[in-house]
Length: 262
Ligand SMILES: Nc1ncnc2c1ncn2[C@@H]1O[C@H](COP(=O)(O)OP(=O)(O)O)[C@@H](O)[C@H]1O
Ligand SMILES: [Mg+2]
Image (cartoon, rainbow, N blue to C red; front, side, top):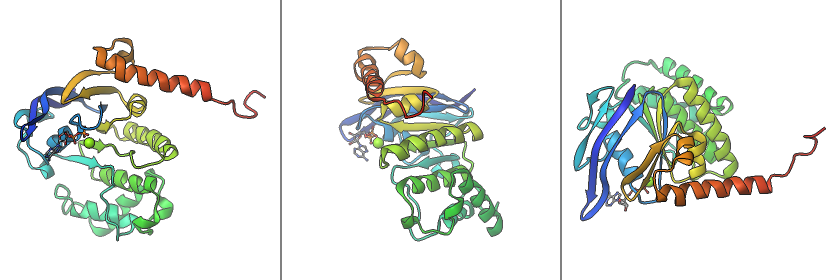
């Protein structure tokens, strides 16, 4: 079933056309990546989906209902940014519990104790049970991003949008957070849209990938189909070649771990 249907989004800033007639659908429970180089319009799509930006034309439907002009708080979508957007002076627990208490959609649903309980559960799922009373500044970047993910999941949105959430993190943290995110998505079944310019990340995480350049969609398909049936030269030259180079270098530099052949 389609969770989101996006029809003919067009957007310009001044004289600059940023999105040109962008249409796509996102399926219920799907992990969809939007992959494309810096400046191609990924964040603009996301801001239009969540209601922080208005398209010049086009429409958006969620669960069959038009949401094109709905305010952000009525869309039941969560967002995780690159820079966490957390409350620096609050504890880890409070960051999540406070969001539950103050959410416009959930307002009044949780007592203080219930919000704390729910926050503890969500933080346990992202491996932060031992850090509940710490301040944000005492956490690593990866841990802060886990708090942001726990906070967004706690609010139980219909769709979660991620805008390059790993780009400030080191490679090891990225790899572990990547598999944790995939596990969380399976567990919750939440529809996720994940923006990245990192091809490897998109191919590792996604049910489908929407490849964009200069405000247009080049291909929207499964990772396997993109590799087996590239839609055009752009996909062949910039996506598949890169992925192949990365795979080759991984094989070339892979050193067998000691003891693995015993
Ligand atoms: N508020 C804005 N005002 C003017 N230009 C903008 C604004 N937001 C984005 N742009 C321009 O739109 C283009 C696409 O930006 P963006 O959606 O952020 O790309 P991406 O996320 O793919 O890097 C860029 O050229 C950017 O400079
Ligand atoms: Mg961006």
